[in-house]
Figure 1 (cartoon, rainbow, N blue to C red):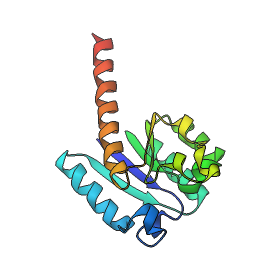
Figure 2 (cartoon, one colour):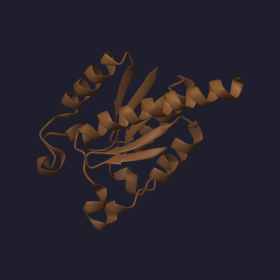
Figure 3 (cartoon, rainbow, N blue to C red):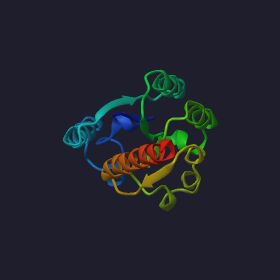
Length: 155
């Protein structure tokens, strides 16, 4: 099973940027934690981070050709205004879960609306770095349920 974790703008500054909101762990720390968790479950997890909207869209489209089974994405600030990113998520038809470290609905007014969420199968937010682990568990549940339903439909 191949799952990709995508992080958008400024997430490369985890541990530096507003630690009172995002914590003291770096992006590298987060990726190690997710990698260890996924290895226990024998899942291939790959990571990508960019501060550029176009690079994120290009990477999402490459996931389609690479037959990625699931995507966990933290679009960063693009969450709130990137219709292009939302369209890219829709266009690839890969189950995608939006994730946020902070609880975006408890923050500034402009952060309370996500234009990308409607393109995703779900949103996990507000659990700090654990949001990613929760999203991974949710993705595994979703993919297993989907496979089970396909098997039932074949019979």
